[in-house]
Image (tube, rainbow, N blue to C red; front, top):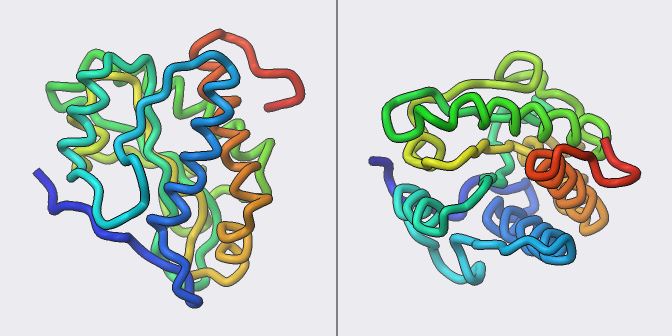
Length: 192
């Protein structure tokens, strides 16, 4: 069990992580639907607070999703930059999807390095990865899933990228490519 989500971190100018997350997710949903995917989002809009992370996991599980991704931006140190893929640790409910989550995480990592302007985090994780046993959103989900910290909102350079609609679309395209690769075995043309 975890405390329910808030709007998360924000840039120095007040652009919230919640707005970033929802905007990228909306772009990604549109791209995946063009690919023929059925998309389940755990929030219908960016008004107020969405369901708590344990409830979000149950939504994903009940939908019998083939794959899931948590889209985030980090609230790290001001001098820190880059992305990190957070992967689950086996803790019972998710035991059967650890290997497939790791594979999916490698596709997200590869797509992010190839298709976005973000480098690997220089302050969090190791080589752009970290395993976490304390995140209900990852560890209660019974489908392959990772969480991506797309960049660091307190860092001015990352913040400029994270708040750019052009870069938000690039992030969505990279995530779309990783999901397509995971589900079909092939990278979409022109990606990773």
